[in-house]
Each structure stands twice: as C-alpha cells, then as structure tokens.
Length: 475
Ligand code: B12
Ligand code: SF4
Image 1 (tube, rainbow, N blue to C red):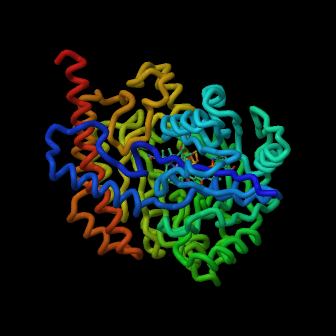
Image 2 (tube, rainbow, N blue to C red; image 1 turned 90 degrees about the vertical axis):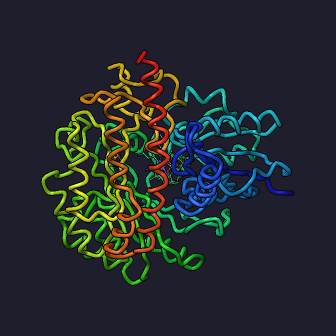
C-alpha cells in the first residue's frame, strides 16, 4: 500500500526579515534605484536569515508508519501543486497571517485538507477556524503524532488543543530528512530550552511558551549536535530566546559541547557579562556572536514595559566583558518606548561608541497582537490602526509607526528616529565595526552593510508616512 503524504509549509512574510522592500511606492525611487532595491531584496532574502523552520523540522521528525512527510519552504520553492497530498500543514506566524490564509484558501479550493498551527493559531484560534480544516493549538511536538494517526485512520478532528506544554526532557530526535539542505545559510538550528521567565510587555514568547523554563536533556542535545555535524559542518544557531536564562544548565551544556569545535550564535541577556565562568565556557564552546536585547537606555522606559532584568547602569560594562571574551554583540534597541524622550538618540550613539557594539539594531516598537502592550496601547487609543485589523500590525523593518509614542509627538518622533538611523548606519561605520569586531569580521560587515540598505528603505517609508499623517491632520 502506498504511503500517505503530508506536506509542511513555511510561508514568507510580505515585509520584514524575509526580504525587506519598500512598503509604499517611492515617487523618488527611479528606475535604477528600483532595480538596485529589488536585487538587494533577493540577496538579503537568500543570505541573511536563511535558516530552516525548526518547528517543521520537529513535526516532520515524528515517525508514523504508513506516512511520509515533506517540507516546502516557500522562500525558495514553489508549491508542488502537481502532487497529491493527503494533508497540508501551514505554520502561521503573526507577521505572515495574510499570505498563510490566502494559501490555505487556494489549497482548500483545490480540494486539499489543510491543518493550521503555529504562534498565531495558538494565540488566536477563534480567528483561524474558518481558514483551515484542522487547527492545532499550542506546541505540537507530541500531539502531531495523534494528528498523523487520525489521518491514517480517517478520523481527523477539527481541533487539537495542547493542554499541557510538552515535556522537552523526554527526547524528540530532530531530523533533517525532510529538508533541502542547500537552500540555507546553515541547517544547524537547535533549541535547548523553551519558556521565558521574564514578562516584557512587547513580547509574546512567555504567553505562548509559558514562564517556566523547560529544558531538554543535555545528553540529547549533545547527541543532536553530533548528529547534525555529520550532515552539515556550518555554524550552529541556538534558537533559545535566552540561552543564559538558566545559567547552571547553560554552563553544563556548553561545557559538554567544547570538544566538538563548533562555532555558534544565539540570544542572551547582557547579564552574561557578569558571569565570567559562563562567559568563558561560551567562548570556549565556539560562541561567535550573541544578540542581546538592550531596548531603552532609560531605566524608566524598560520598567514601563516590564523589562526588569537589564541592569541599565551595568549594561556597558557587561557588553564590554562579552566582547572581550571574543564574542560579537548584536545590540537590539527599541526607540520610542513609553518614557523615552528626544534625548535617547544621542544617548544611543554615545553608548554604541562606548561599548563598540558590533551590529546595532535600532527598532521601532512593534505592538504585536496578543501582547500586553498591544492591549494597553489599544485601550489608551494610541494604536494607528483598528485593534481588530491584525494584518495592519505587520512586522515591517522599522519602516512604519503603528502607534503614537507617549512623550514625543509622532511628527517629531519620526524625524528623530530617521536622523538616528542615518547617523548609526553608514558605510564608514560598517567598515569600522567590522575591523573592530572580536571575531566573524566578514559577517559583521555583511550585516552592517545590509542595515545601511534596509534603514535607508525605512527612512523613505517613514518620511512618506509622516507626510500622510500631516495631510491627515489637515496641515
Ligand atoms: C528563529 C526565529 C526566526 C527565524 C526563523 C523563523 C521561523 N519561523 O522558523 C527568522 C529570523 C527567519 C524569523 C523571522 C521572523 N520572525 Co521570528 N522567531 C524566531 C524564534 C527566535 C525561534 C522560532 C523557533 O524555531 N521556535 C521553536 C519552535 C519549535 O517553536 P514554534 O515555531 O512556535 O513551533 C511550535 C508551535 O508553534 C507549533 N507549530 C508551528 N508551526 C506549526 C505548523 C503546523 C502545521 C502545526 C500543526 C504546528 C505548528 O508546533 C511547534 C512545535 O511545538 C522565535 C521565538 C520563539 N521562542 O519561538 C521568533 C518568533 C517566532 N518570530 C517572530 C516574528 C515576529 C518574526 C518575523 C515576523 C520578524 C520580521 N520582522 O520579519 C519573521 C517572520 C518570518 C516568517 N515568515 O515566519 C515572533 C512571532 C510572534 C507571533 N506571535 O507570531 C517570535 C515569537 C518572536 C517574538 N518575540 O515575538 N524568526
Ligand atoms: S523579549 Fe526576550 S526576555 Fe523578554 S519576555 Fe520575550 S523572550 Fe523573554
């Protein structure tokens, strides 16, 4: 008997990291500039964040007799409509809801059975029922097997809800068999923990994955790294939101990884700079770069958004310690938080000079539906779009304001933000940062040069939005 075929689909977002482009048509863009933007968009799409979707790797690693699973990454592949699929699973991220639902509608029209899962389905199941035949609400690591069994038995239900978050310690081997390894910058993506003990109000990781940190078994992660190396020797991405959230676990895990001689990148809090033992283990295990969320340099702003774990007065020293350990720092700022004033841009530039941050990211606050800040801004009538219009809250690249800052009028805020990105992202600074980077110099140069381009797009879009806001105000 032939096997049942399941296809798992990753849908690119229209805007944002999947290939940034102008949100609106720029009158001044011109033919040549248009070509340049489109070429760069494709280069960025392919080079920058091209890592495979771990969620779909996890699901496709669930072995069920009589069922074969494939992954289709629409960033690189066209949808294989010429084949018969018994079930098609689509991962829905808040930033890519519209294209995900459009694809689902098209496939259902053609008679395919579509199952929807992922962060948006978990947060807003009531908005997804009409868009899929089956919904999986929550982390699907374990329940996916039930879905596959029901598919085989012809007893698929409308809804599968995960009541208790999966215990990560009981071992789920992640395989790469369903992936085309050649599409990606690297395929070595690993998650060691899930859940975040913090409650930043602009984030929904703690809403989806809970506050309790769940760990995978250290031996299991080590075996996974070893197995991954057989197929792909490139850099590892540890996708944990905070790889140092549990310092003892992190120390034990990365100590075990030292003999493998890998190089890796991840996300951490600046607190790492205060734990010299862990810093040493990170460095010896091959850590090349860490993204740290600095957000605001104004302590009262971080407090207003429930970010309490950043020691503002000690941040600079922490970052210097991390860089001195040979690890590059990607410093992620948000300008426009509630207590921010027009003094922030100077403070940020001074901070960048003082710490030598290798890649700065100067973000605008994105009120994501499903976060606390989204609800608060909606209640305070500071959102620029209807709170029910989730598509409007897309994840563009610092390219549009979605809300009114508290202390700075929006018409003043926009030029202040664009002037800041113009100072921070210049070709000259990109080269300087690459020269000074403790390691991964060419990657640091590449990122900074991409940002010169992307923040250039951001300025054009924001200037256009400012004009529209002024016209709207009758000026
Ligand atoms: C690595 C990463 C990326 C990578 C890879 C993206 C990817 N989708 O794989 C890159 C850099 C490309 C990226 C891009 C973006 N990202 Co991102 N990213 C992450 C990060 C750090 C880890 C993702 C991950 O692998 N998690 C581990 C897996 C196992 O968890 P999971 O994806 O939730 O999957 C589980 C369930 O959701 C479910 N599931 C998922 N898909 C499906 C599909 C089916 C059919 C089923 C049944 C179940 C199911 O089962 C899985 C196993 O339990 C998360 C933070 C986080 N903690 O998840 C943010 C996160 C997912 N990203 C986010 C955002 C906003 C984006 C962008 C929109 C950013 C932008 N400005 O462009 C884009 C969107 C790209 C896209 N088209 O999806 C938000 C999503 C918010 C939301 N509510 O949807 C998160 C949560 C970060 C945050 N703090 O808010 N991202
Ligand atoms: S932003 Fe980072 S630290 Fe804050 S809640 Fe989200 S995952 Fe946790």
